[in-house]
Length: 284
Image 1 (cartoon, rainbow, N blue to C red):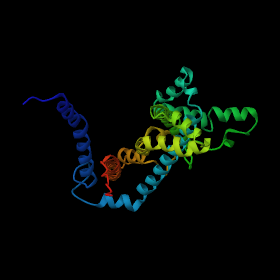
Image 2: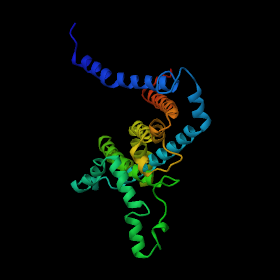
Image 3: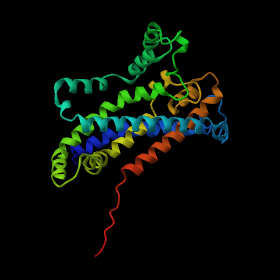
């Protein structure tokens, strides 16, 4: 039997992507139930109970979701505003370069630059001190490693907003939104009505899946919250690595339990997102 290139590609995808993922997930599940791993002596629910009793997972999940949601809303809102008001400006090479430049910078570099700019000993703190706006570095507001995750949100916006801007500009062009807007205005619609009823609905409808995926991506981000986040609560990925890598070997299984719960949540969200929707037909 002759194997087609399409079938061969599927086989390679399964071997390279699917099998390692499920293998790692299976190992994490076994470790979380005490079946395998250092100091584990057999099947037990003890580690799962410890995770829920400590409350760290729930706090970290709420903290992570809040940061990811705020970052996505601000990024999408800023990208929409720029795409609507400066569409023609971004067609020039100079502005195109400005958009693409942040996308070429890794997250860990963005986090490092953010820390160097916004920390109490950073560039802005020294400028404010030199200008006499603050008496010492301690007078500079907490913008990194802070309770409200301001540094994390700013870093996320720096990474995500340019991507959404490019996405909206592409949709704006492909969906002929400029022509639709001109047609609506010729029929009596004002600028506000065109934005609220034509431009924004089309842009969001065509990109909502990508927006949700980026929310999931930010939810599991590691480098940025590791450098800019506070000690407690921590974002999920940082909490998982902390539990798995710490010196207390009895906590490793709890880290795997948290990882399993997070993986299940993300997998269910992806299934709901990409499962084909049944179209309901109405008989007349």
